[in-house]
Length: 251
Image 1 (cartoon, helix red, strand yellow):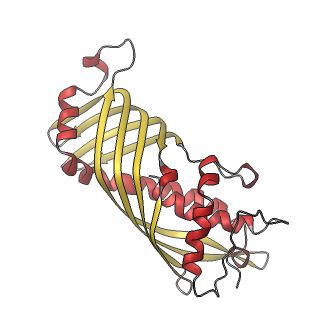
Image 2 (cartoon, one colour):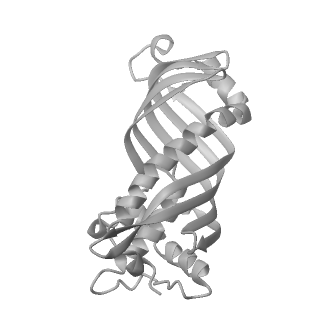
């Protein structure tokens, strides 16, 4: 879920910071007339890496190391995957290690394309799930721990202008991500003091999931991408709407 947040929130933070009376010395301003604008943006985002992880309270930007999502509900019903699940207290760590492999902006089309890599993400969440994966039942409650390595994402973002008080603001109106995971391992833990058989996904189901990683990841990929897109479009737009476009990327 992390990839889009790192890039869009980084761009948005540069924008918000430029409205301050005195620019913090760690902010690198990027001008859209600069022929090396894309390289400037990568440098700006990199310079904000640790601050993004901790959060920036004065800009009302929450930290994402770890990223905490209080609750997430998932419903899918198709031939290969039928599941209704609630994830609570979802925590994702490792996002601050992101690598920007490539970034290209298009001012005329208000577009952005980027490729990023996350070397390793650690996920932990309380889960309550009922359903099946192919022919394997997925039913139970407990704690899920997951490790995902070499996560890559191709991102395509487009925006549009809105106007308030004769000033233009940028809004993200379309975000597409193509996420791939190099390796993963999931562990389903039983709540303390409760019987494994009654409460947690069985060890046989866990073995099937970990033994068929590529197939399982391909099935749940749309869930990951849809969740990331919806969650972080909202976060980015809250920040982007706080500063006019011409302050975000001055001429």
